[in-house]
Length: 137
Length: 463
Image: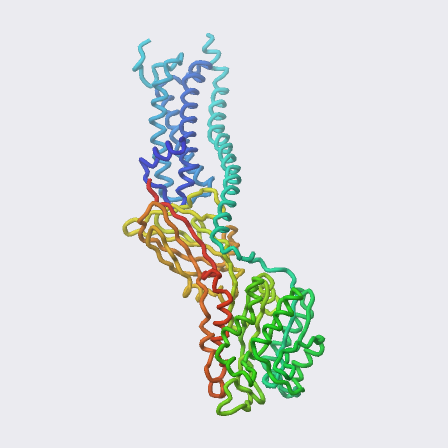
């Protein structure tokens, strides 16, 4: 299920895995691993930003600048994870690997933004970061 | 105030937590998952292995003997002694080189006597008792060795070929040994019964019927040796005998026994086999094979991948040839149990066949293993690599079967003649060798026509 979901998602953007002889490694391991890690890491960074830095600890990281740094950090991790997955599973590196990393980084931007919208209301200091919408406390 | 305090006190701690989480997310989670993956393959490959062997078991002929060679064997060595064999063993002299026959037989004899692969051994001189019946005279190692080096002194007539084979085989079956029969295999029928000339094939077949009944196989090795002295052809016209001075005359070594034991005799005892080899009744229904898709030395082309990610041995692939991009990949075979002559890449290239269901495909290159491939663990056990190109797939699933049909070796018709009266003009020919071989083949007519088959299933790639 999860395997099919993530291979479907990534192959939608990337097309069939290349080199083709590693198709099953991508579909059964690399895509689901990367997808799950993408979800978990993005969620963790959002929670870290809104609930740890700006609620539990009340650091001064509540400005959009700080949110943006976290967004970029998440994208960098999202770019690194696919490459690590490909190398860690003994799959031949291909230009496909880097396209995959790029697509994963773009997806991480979207996810980080969506998680931010969903969770920022619970933050004490940063509920208006990156913008006030849709809340109006 | 409170928030300021928190800010100062825990700012560094916060950064630390941030990095910790990143590190955990990046490595901890990652390792855990990959560990799961590493443990995952085992049950899968285990469950795949019995399924694969099960499939092979049903495909292989039921009589298929396990191809592994036996460590030690019992050997009965028979040397035909008759006037016709004398020329192979001319009397020794200091300035004379031994004939090919003598040096081959000496090596064979010492390997049988002293080698580590032979358990118990018996030596026989096969002769005729004066009434046309074969006699197997049990002799010592020394006597046999002396016969080979010094020649045959007594005046002995040859026995009819089928009768000699039958007697030798019956003797060896009783003792549970492999028969190694060395003879010129020139048919010398009973002068009172010339009809034996016509029925040579069926006579050979009936003389060896025990081999079929006991599921034995026959290996025939042919070599030619210079011949000195009187040569007695089967065809007595125009001359009943010819005097030869070093012309080459064929002699044969027949090895008869259970497949595993015959393989031991051929590969470990005889060694250095002559180029002319023929094998009857051998089967290797289940040679190990696998599609090779991830090796650097044999990169596949087009869209093709192993159906199972974790299988050590890949017998099922997913593929789809696309326009301008046919699928090509290698099938690795372990043919180390096959006779050496069948392991030659040129022979395989010529005779290997590919049968396809559900598509169109062809065999490309056939290469033997090299030190480079032996160095790669997943390729190390395979001896040959057959490239298969799939240009079209017409069904959702199908099979690619690489098979080696058993064919009569090309040398047999070349070494066979209808008239052996003048070996000086046509050397290296034996009277009606082809008929003798036909008789042998008749023994194994029910055995699989394929020396081996290797079937790769394929699924048409859809998504």
